[in-house]
Length: 106
Image (cartoon, rainbow, N blue to C red; front, top):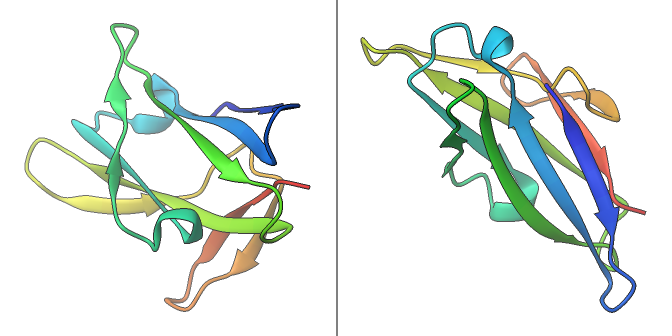
């Protein structure tokens, strides 16, 4: 799962591209990003022609040093599973018995 960051010089923000490649999506019809940066509200990633899912967000660099997040993958039958980002900066134990991915923004 690729993760890329571009720090902006004009604002205290970092442009982050979250992506789940086809292999990691393993047949998912939809992929959602959930994180501290959006109060854990699901944000649907766009499915690309390559089978990859992707979205880009600007995250503040002046509020906190890092944010927790994870992905929710939904298959054709509507079954859901949660997964972490293979390219995350770190992992921390989450409140539901699984780890959350961490992205550092400073």
